[in-house]
Image 1: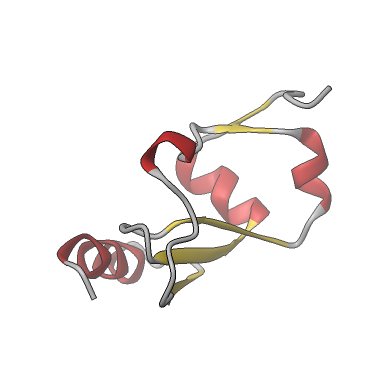
Image 2: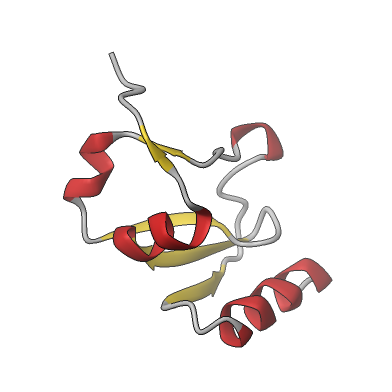
Length: 80
């Protein structure tokens, strides 16, 4: 596990964020694909989403309501 992943896991635990950090064997995203704090309304219909996890090989599974609370995301239609 990379240093950023440990920092993220510690941040999640220290701030009592209800999320699960996942480490993967294969990269699932790039820095360019990292999302800003903008959430499409369609996403709010889901229970959980996966976000960046501190390295190209990890993700965080988090409830949508918790994500919006933590990142103070703006719900904006971004799809066509």
